[in-house]
Image (cartoon, rainbow, N blue to C red; front, side, top):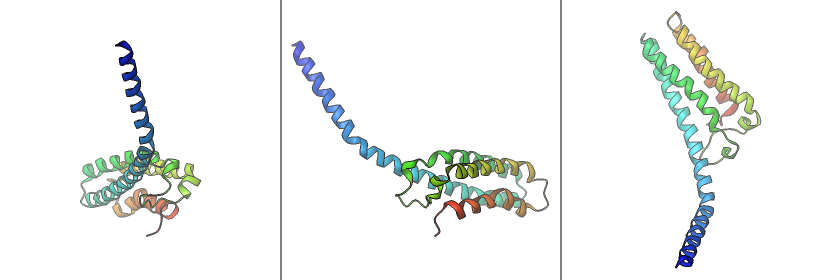
Length: 153
């Protein structure tokens, strides 16, 4: 009786192990897809948030705009983690190989973008040139990244 349980447990472990091993390639592909789609979604979110920041700032609704600026700042920090080596291609990525070839430069730009959003929260109310200030602290970083690290449309 005891031997039957041992054999049953062994078969169960063998079945589970085989299932896990056969599932690994599918899970790794899925995680690459999730990474690429995740970074695209986060960049897209930052873009739509940036447009809202500009609209709110132009209306003088600085508190609402500042909240969104801080959200964008955090998103830039998170984005650094969305570019692992295995996510260079596939799933309609627009990321250029220069990201991985110049990883430090890309990461530094994400950190600069994050820091610039925090700086923007401090200077936006005291400026007479809201559009120019937003271009300097927000849109210029977007442009720099797109020129260097994103595929042209």
